[in-house]
Length: 183
Image 1 (cartoon, helix red, strand yellow):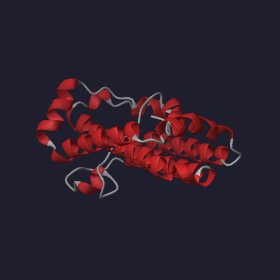
Image 2: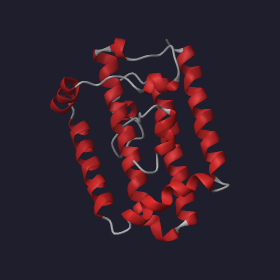
Image 3: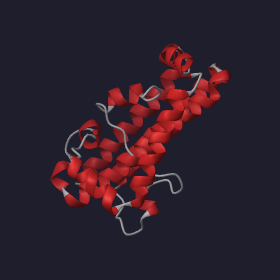
Image 4: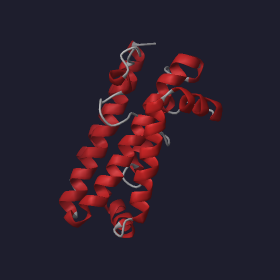
């Protein structure tokens, strides 16, 4: 994923997940007891994606459409990971690491059997997977994709980027504090 390279690095490759509409899986499913750490992690990741989008569009207005597609894809992946988190929490709680850092918390194992069970039992998960596939295709088939992929890494040298990264890092520290409060 292009825009969330830094978030992926900081989280050891993980991103969270939820469908368009309600801002969180727990909000969309009242029967699910929300996890403050997971909800905050998803919110932090989404803010990072939106901040990157705003920076990219201000720097390269001609890439607005492709940047929006990439942001929407990253947010959909965050949303999917959130759905997966709640499934794993409820069915395999031992896979969730809460006594380390945000990266360990975000990087739980999701087996192919878990994915299959989610697809069989959760229409929102299926719909979100289809949306992710569509956004990936839209990005890959965009005439601006090559230009965007060449330019996006340069965002790290923009003087407006360090505060965006600092907000992400602060948000991850806040997640870690929440993890200490809620075992």
